[in-house]
Amino acid sequence: MNILILQGSPRANGNTAWMAEEFKKAAEAAGHKVTLVNVARKKIAGCLACEYCHGKGEGACVQKDDMQEIYPLLAEAEVLVLASPIYYFTLSAQIQAPIQRFYSMMKPANVKKTALLLSSYSPDVYDAAIAEYKLIAGFCGYEDTGIVTAKLDEQKTDETKQKVIDLVAKL
Image (cartoon, rainbow, N blue to C red; front, side, top):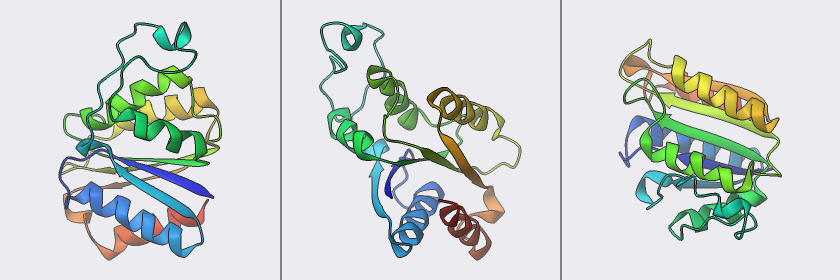
């Protein structure tokens, strides 16, 4: 399967980045083609709600930023993995911008399955991010293959790594 991981943490060696990299390693070891993009390092603006994409743009966004690199990857992906830290009870702003920009294509057409990787220092802060993820997956008709969360004492542990590996096995 062709897997696209959108990693939304600005911390290059942080906990979310670690989870995304472990997912990538496990998926590649299982024979999948994996592209991991750190969207936090990209210049991607949020949706302008200008409707250019649904008019003159014929599905293309009027904004010409680093999202142009992501659109072809989304078009090819069969599995979409979102990886985000929780900074204030929801997905990071860095991953929210590309998610909002899916609007121009309404939904990535070839994606069939999704997964979610979340990290936080606190144990009880995942509900809003999980709810948003489930709304997106449901709206798009994607199969939710699972969610792995890692609070402070679970980060970069063998136990969390195994949860990520088990998630890959569900693909």
